[in-house]
Every structure is written in C-alpha cells, then in structure tokens.
Image 1: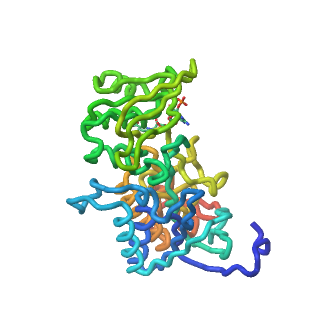
Image 2: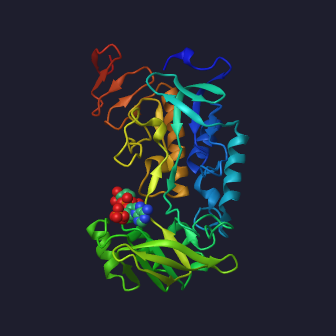
Length: 369
Ligand code: NDP
C-alpha cells in the first residue's frame, strides 16, 4: 500500500500493540498487554444493527452465562463484557470504534486504515471472532422482532441448560458435526430433539452421525427446511413451520426451542490473501502459540478456533496472544506454525533449536561461543 493514497486528514497513530475485536479474547489480550505497560489500542466495529455488529462480541447477544468460571450464580453476557471492558480500561487500554477498511501486513509496522485513522502497529493481535450463520427466516430475529434470545439460539452449550429448555421439545437445524454435537448435548435436558436437515444425508463425520443415530431421544426430519419460527412474545417459541424440499409440502412441528447449527463464519475477510487460513477462513496459528504465518501477527479466540468456541477458551487464547506479543516485543523467539521460532529482528531458529538463520540468510549454530 502506498502511504500517500490515504487521505491527509486522517490521524496517524503508532502503537506497540494493536488488538482487533472486543470479545473475551480481545479484551483479555488488552488486560494483559495493558498490565505489561504496552498501552494497547483496541479497535472494534461500531454498533450497527444492519450488519449485526456489537462491540463485545457474541456474549452481547446472549442472556445468562452459567459456565463462565468465577460466577457461581451465572452472569448476564452483556454484564460480563462490561466487566471485561472496565478491567481493560483500568490498565490503560485505549478504544477506537471504527471500521477497518484496509490492512497491510507485508511489512512491520503493520498498517491498518479506518475512515478516520491510519494505525501503525509493531504487533497485531487479531480477535475479530466468528459469527454464527442464521437461516434468515421469519421469527428468527432477536426479540422483540422475533424469538432470538426467547427460544431461538445458535449455541446449545451456552443456552441448552437454561430452565426454559428443560424437558422441552427442541429443534436443531443442520446436518454437520456442530448440529450432531448440539443435538446430542441437548438430549441431556430436552424431552425430545428433532434434527431438521435439508437433505437426506448428513454432512457430519461418521462417528458423530452414529452417536446421534444411536440416541433414542433424537429424531431426524429429512429433506426439510425451517420456513418460519412460530411463537408469541409471551410464551416464546411454540413451533416451526417446515417445508419439505422434495414435495414442497408444509407442516408444523410443535417445539419450545430452536437451535440453529448451520455453521459459523470467521470474521477474516480483511486478511484474505495475507494470512494463512483453512478452507473455511479460520486463521491458522501455531497451536503451541498464537503466532500466525506472519511474525508479529497473533490470532486468538473464535477467529482461529472452529472447535471449542467458548468464552473461557477465547479468554485463554487472548492471554496467550498477549504473552506472545510481549515476548516478541522483548526480542525473544516465538514459535511459528512451521515449528521454527522467529524474533522481531527476523532471526529464524530451527525447530530442533540447533541452527539460527540470520536476516542476511547466513546460518549459524545455536551454541555458546
Ligand atoms: P458445516 O459447514 O460442516 O455444516 C453445516 C450444516 O448446515 C450442513 O449440513 C449444511 O447442509 C447445513 N446448512 C448450511 N446452511 C444452511 C441453510 N441455510 N439452511 C439449512 N441448512 C443449512 O458446519 P459445522 O459447524 O457443522 O462444522 C464446521 C467445521 O467444524 C467442520 O469441519 C466440522 O467437522 C468441525 N466441527 C468438529 C466438531 C468435532 O469434531 N467435535 C464439532 C463441531 C464442528 P448441507 O449438508 O446440505 O450443506
């Protein structure tokens, strides 16, 4: 990116640590790097009803969180995020609510461009999360427009154990591993779980399918799409209207809860072509650390995790990203996805720790003189 292509009116900010995203991962990274006196700048998208963005991440659209450790009586998702944010503020985090329009990771400091600012970052922590995919059918929107949060959820682990779903008939939409996992999990609480899938074959892995087929509480409704979620604001969900994808017939299935499990989309469009990702778009990290393929760029939380996706695991990897960034800024080696370790000076330490490749290309032995 050429420097002079940006408007001169933009403010230029230079920071040691820039964090993108204000969910549990981003705010934990902010707490740690703040306490390390690195004055992190945390950038997050402004609230936008149309684009369905809310600073604070997915917990902002959850009600009660019962499984975040430290809250024996549970906590409301938005209240938890207010506490995360206050804690990050307490240690000097600076917040910027602006849309990032361009990112250049080809050289350090990395460049981020927003409508009003050009930000230069020595290290970048990406915690932009993932968004659950929704069907887009009537009745699915957040209450009071629909029944989202009042019987409709995209997270069985988060909401399944709530009293509203106990001994109730629940619908899970989808045919992948997530749908099988959520349906199996929900049978602990529900009286019956209907898996509604749009084809007559599942996408899920064999082992997950068989687990679901063996479970007597699960019933499959094949070649079926949810056309509408029915209910009242007073009683929540009362059923779903189903369209058979083969004969186009419609029928109503009575239920008290609907879990949409049709996949997630990591928020990584900005980094496409610059960072290594899997086929779905999750950022690849080293796993031993949060390092991406670009030294100095770290990823944490749901943006790099398609498996666990919990607030507590996001916070855990946020802490790891902060410690990795601190280490990198302290000129210490950080393990990369290749197994090599890399320093801020561009020295590459071989996975067996025997050789160092210097930025000049010269290879030296990693031994005391
Ligand atoms: P997938 O993309 O694998 O599956 C999504 C499912 O939802 C598919 O069956 C798809 O139908 C259906 N679907 C998508 N869009 C719609 C729609 N608009 N209307 C109706 N149905 C729709 O997503 P998952 O979240 O299940 O899995 C993502 C990745 O995470 C996978 O690689 C999976 O293996 C992994 N994973 C692993 C787990 C584990 O091993 N424990 C647990 C959870 C996930 P169709 O099949 O017709 O395309």
